[in-house]
Image 1 (cartoon, rainbow over the protein chains, first blue to last red):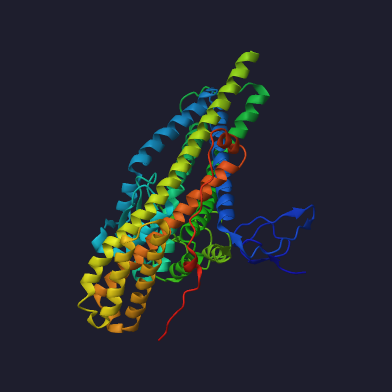
Image 2: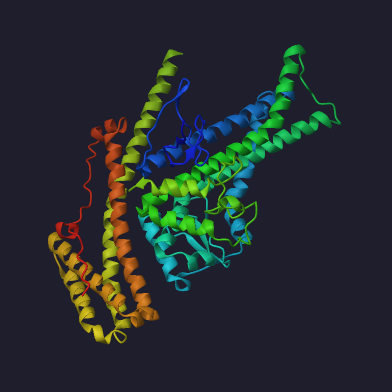
Amino acid sequence: MGRLVCPRCGYENKENALYCNLCGHIFRYEGKRRKLQRLQTRRSFYDEIERNKRKSYFLMMLFGFLVVVLGYLIGQVWGLGYYGVVIAGVIALVMLLVSYYRGDEVVLGLSRAKRVYYEDDPRLFNVVEEMKIAAGLPTLPKIYIIEDTAPNAFATGRDPWHASIAVTRGLLNKLNREELQGVIAHEISHIRNYDIRFAMIAGILLGVVAMISDAFLRSMFYGRRKRKVSVKGQGGVVILVIAILAAILAPIFAKLLQMAISRKREFLADASAVELTRNPRGLANALRKIASDPEPLEVANRATQHLYIVNPVKKIGMKAKSLFSTHPPTEARIRILESMVV
Amino acid sequence: MGTVVALVILGAIVLWMAASYNGLVRLRNQVKNAWYQIDVQLKRRYDLIPNLVETVKDYMSYEQETLEKVIKARNMAINASGAKKQAEAENMLTGALKSLFAVVERYPELKSNENVQRLMEELTATENKISFARQFYNDSVYRYNTRIQVVPTNIIASMFNFKPQEFFEAPGEEREAVRVDLR
């Protein structure tokens, strides 16, 4: 028959595929027949921005829902009633406050980033200031350099008034001005879209889910004290079973949600970067250069990988859409960028 | 019971109206601010050019003419009065700077000189900042105009007389294709 061409990124999939293997776009079907969609060779970045915002908010709502359901179920089993949800909420709030106010210092320290000033690199400062003007940021983000020859960059900061951007020495040496501007635009977009805050919330929700599930399962199978389990006949047992199942599956599901959110925000940052520079090619070329650079980023590890512009831990050329990956495949990102019309 | 519900609904509507109004005010002020930010960048360019040209005068002694053209255009722009004359003077300054860039391209020893490189970087950055400031102004106008036209905020907008703003337009001469002189 033929290959199914993805209308978003142009990748050729198996016919009857449910979603695009490269960029994750879900294909529309009318009953059993595939509804043919012509390749949208020119999309505006405004469309991409809207679609990614919508999807990430939906996923976040799902996440909140998951926490509420889990808290309720476990609360039922423990006889806490609605207090289960309240306790979950309180734990989440405390964790949120701690990482909100001290989070970026930790991350910058972990990555051995060094604060720099205008004289250290006028070109870098000018590029960042240009993007600050285009984005309408209230103040210039703090700028850091990581002394590593692998090209990469990340942004951190809870809101545009308290933002920092870090780039590696490798990035400064290997990219030209246009490409550097694309990367900085992407990072500034993360700041402007409050992505760091978004990711923090998702991470904390995940932590809460994991903690609650863990505590609950522990109490079920290693319980020393007598737990006040309200098992009222048939109904109580059913709830118990559901709660145990939920406790086992919830952390996995939460992780998947978190990764899906992260991927959507990456696409969003790419589209927002184009909104700033009005030049998709700069970022596309930069992504190519970064992804094909063989050097590993020494300071990166699993804890900080999600912050960087291209995942420094996973290998490049990864085509299959991995549900556990924080970033979309670089090839999909490049294709979507190059199909954008300004 | 019925009156409580009615009051809650009324309260929600009032809150929404207040929030919409405030949002419109913020967007309109952002447009105004963005407009003056363009002037900030233009002024920065005026202040920067003489200093930068001074630093490279010795290295570019054989291209004095180009440098003088830049200084002259800059002085004209700073003294121009009235929006139209200012726009024309701005165009001339941009043109003079473009010839300066072309000159530097032509002499490799010049291009590799550190001071000249710094000059070029600063001038490029200044030109970029002006255009990004204009871009941000247009983006702000776009957001504001859209907000006052879509439902439901258009109700509030017409109630409180929010008018659409104008986009920044490049004056006619700038729209013509740039002629590259490869002499």
